[in-house]
Length: 46
Image (cartoon, rainbow, N blue to C red; front, side):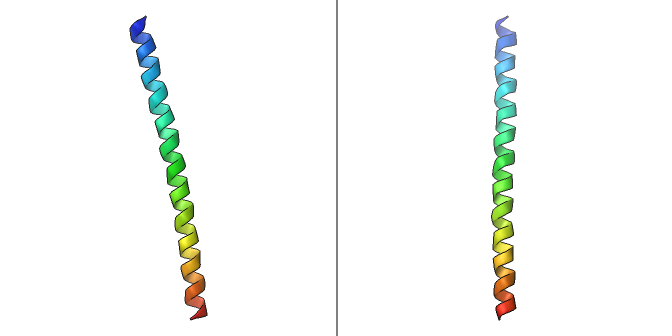
């Protein structure tokens, strides 16, 4: 019974970690889009 409980907890932590990493990846992607758009606007002004 204890092994099942520990295995369930490990799986829960792994799934939570995956969601967190996915969220960070999306945030980094959004920042990259903003930087790209800013660079393009600056280039157009020059």
